[in-house]
Length: 431
Image (cartoon, rainbow, N blue to C red; front, side, top):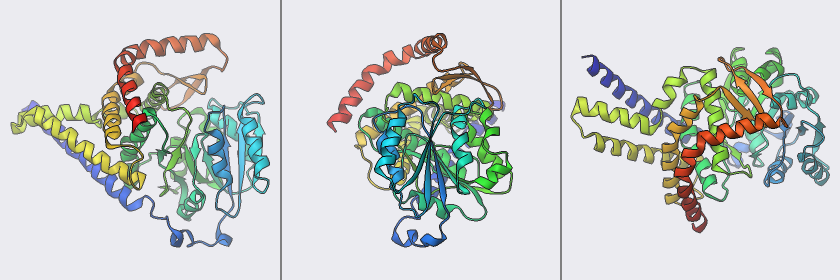
């Protein structure tokens, strides 16, 4: 009887996950891009639009940095300022920013050189000075790798109703070349989009700080930026601080387009492992719940349960489960893309299979250590989400230790997937 009860609970959990699929597809179809078009954009006259301060914390350069930053200089918005910041006067991003400021003299743009080392989170340190210098109450925080569209600022302000304290952009990706770029786009257009859309539909905090708009007066009541510098997942805790004051956190109708010049799969996996560690230390219940939301793990468990309770072939059930999951993910990414995908169906299938099979490994890696490396700094992550900085850029010994640990952890997967990635890359190029 106990085994019967467990198998029944497994199937109920399986049905609940399909409910999440349905909610995310319906909410995405109803919500995303609804403020687009000339009629919607003209609903608010220029004279009624508030001024906006855009904070762009930068560290280093890549081949797409100039393109990404330039997209903010061309915003179709009457009154805004761009506040760039770099941690020190040796940062190569300085030259890129200065050249853009010279090219767009009519845009109110400033560059702050030198971060204030007041908290563990380097991004917060890099934003303290521009945040204090911002002229407007509406603040946008946008990461280095984000490329925007001319109407994005206007659309986000449209979402900033009187009872709203924070407007988030769901992370997605601009189209780029190579299988690594397709892989990232499939990740953010399926699993990440499903979680983000369903959570926002149910008013659950699923904040990502790649691109967000907030009210400065509300954040100041929570202490400003500095109190959140003890976390690396500062976006999640800033959203919680705003919600605790009675304000809503809403989702923009336009996704944030990541356009980093680095599409290496190994670097993206390090990023996913870091996020997994931060999620599980900030919200420990995800240690048990998150693996059950992955198609392979959930499908295997549900197949065994269905075989026992319903006398169904576990192999047939598992294949059917994966097929329907694949189709629902394809529908979702088409909604997020708002049109045809910039890659072939075969590339989508290959990237989708790669993501689904790698997901358990990524989650397992998140349990291996409480140390994370971000922006060349090494941190120890504590339960509750707080971090302690234990090394600085240039600490050669720590960097060698981190490299050795990473290489040791990934050697098996690299050997098994290297040939596969080479084949998929060649297919992506020929497509």
